[in-house]
Image (cartoon, rainbow over all chains, first blue to last red; front, side):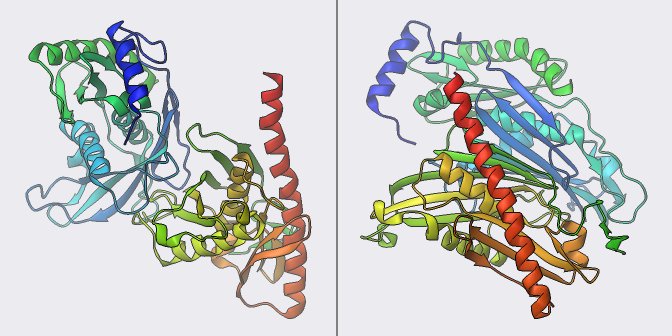
Length: 255
Length: 236
């Protein structure tokens, strides 16, 4: 992604005064909206907006073999699609490295916080388990895809039903899901760190940091991205900000 | 399964009745033009980017713009998860959609340019190609692309030995024929026509008449959706 140097200068100058292009404080999140159950054909789904960024996550489930090292656990697969609908910078075709990193960070938060009880998704140990597919479509890109995708994936999981009926295995029942992680993303440019970056801020970002916290405020996943660096204090401060914000976001998610 | 009972269909519709349709122009903020469409159980979003320089350059046409429509189904939009990415079916639909739209767009105004039309099926319940074209047309108009007309599409078909308008999921699977049609509503010129199944010539005539009529009804809704968006601008 290219950004003009004039825009970059503008954002840098604002940053020096502790300001952001949309007038937010550096630790201020944009409004979040979550709409559940928007896709009938999916086992679960959720449309999430953070400001103008909109993503849609859908859950599909299928029967498959477990991984050899976890014979009594269901499997989880997460994919994100930066479809060209969402931005002039996205191209069609197989996922590139940005989409892969995004999906893996979302996956890590959900996996490591034990959001899905994978043991309950085992049907015959070593033979047959449920495979949960989380597919996330970016519909409108205005920054901070990491948090939007993580929220959408969690909300869709909370909405999901195991499709026993479709596989003639009895009645549908809710997917065993609890306490999803809350992901909080920060970017750094010209020495300033802001939470929930807008598109312009994503474009000038030198470094990015995502942290996922559980309901106790413990850390479940992290990812530092881009070529810039953070100091130890900056990371600590970001974790503190994320822990402060998480309960409010969790309320919206579980609302 | 009995698809028609006492002259009514599974969802209570008469043979010549459309499913409920909701059209919203311009829901996406990033695209040059966009449209969200609900049509029965279908949920479709379309976005237009352009006209812009055609890349790679070898696809450029020195006399007119290239229309690049891409139809894509979300992996969670169907019963069994669809593998992400284009398959042969979606490539075919992308091609005929591009060609149908190209017919009405004043492409000669933009030599060497490209207009991207992205159609995303979020939830599928039969008739997604028609819904895609209908949504794409509104997105093109919303993007201010000059067109001779706003294209519109609708299918007719045959279920339970009756010719019906606008097949829903079960009718599409169990039915005897499906005829998707896209037209330029002002002239009623046909921009897209496909058929599979089994129809007599008389049944085809009836199906075409129904589909034409359905298209005209939807064309009115497309215009209302566009008017609604630009009216709200005026009030602001």
